[in-house]
Length: 151
Image (cartoon, rainbow, N blue to C red; front, side, top):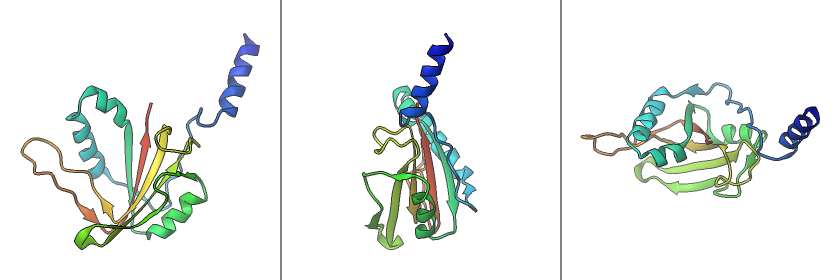
């Protein structure tokens, strides 16, 4: 039995993505509880199947420039080969949007990742959910850090 547990532990250590990575929050980033509440409301209005696919989302914001936050995470985690640091995505009057995606579990691509994060500046908030609400997005001049954990 001890030998089997030893092999299992070795397998968990050796297989990329088999263990959850501890996510480092950018220094000075603050939890965005407003976005978290809006996300939970959107999730509550979704089907059970979609709710499971959505996983858990954690929202942080910082007033620091995108490039500074990007450099912090680039030094720590593997950037995905999907949407590598998109620059100049048009946002109308809000200018352009920068975003980048990082796998925290070394999966390499978001489609296979169970733990990843997205950086975004300016930050485009979650659509206001619920009956009687006209869908809208708030665009703020901050860098958003959205962390996703899936089962």
